[in-house]
Length: 240
Ligand code: CAA
Image (cartoon, rainbow, N blue to C red; front, side, top):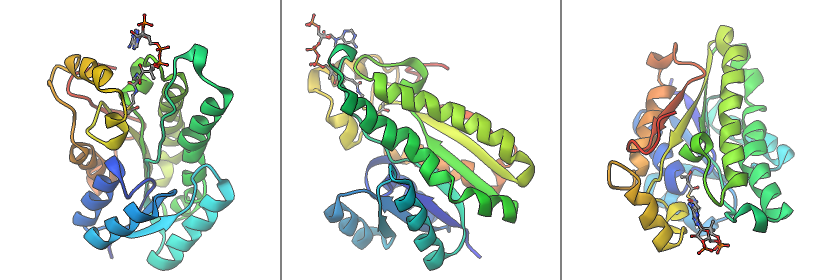
């Protein structure tokens, strides 16, 4: 029986690559998305992966979404909390709204995604929680007080979950991608982006598939003893 994997934000960017990599590795994959119906429909058409629409910032919607996925595909054994947004601004210009939007989606969204699947993982004595953090959660970033706070928070979440889940066969790990060629990074003003790429010793942006391969490894049975860790994939931009 193939395992069931849920990927939030799984129809675009890094999430889409993760969904595809897990499908290729034999998982039954559900890709959650928040709003872009057109991109989700195109993704399903191209990959055959079913998409599910809910807002990860909403606990009740997440709980209902998880229940729907489990009714359709079976118990979720791998959960990839990938959904995330940016609302970049220097701190002196950052509004409370920009702060709360990012906290609600990127940080509370991880709680809302993992909490509903956690009891089932504990009962079945197997689970994989993989949270997509960021190099900017490790090093901080000009213009990203809100985002960096959430991505640093991800690391605290997996280190705590790892201790709670270890005896129940559940692992929880974070991946910290560097700058990856996605719409999110392309939205950074070109001059700023060029300056960032100049600071990456690899001399290029990463590819979504390079992050997806890390996820597939952490999800596998072979990774059972890797728990509470943080994998950096950033082209040598920063060493945590
Ligand atoms: N360090 C120091 N100073 C910097 C700086 C930096 N990294 N970046 C910009 N500045 C300076 C500028 O030189 C400018 O200075 P002057 O006023 O003296 O010319 C000043 O800050 C710009 O200030 P503004 O008030 O004009 O800033 P702004 O309102 O235009 O906002 C910004 C700027 C939105 C923060 C913009 O710099 C930006 O988008 N930066 C990129 C942030 C970033 O890396 N985001 C990552 C998105 S991708 C992602 O998040 C994925 C992931 O996980 C990696």
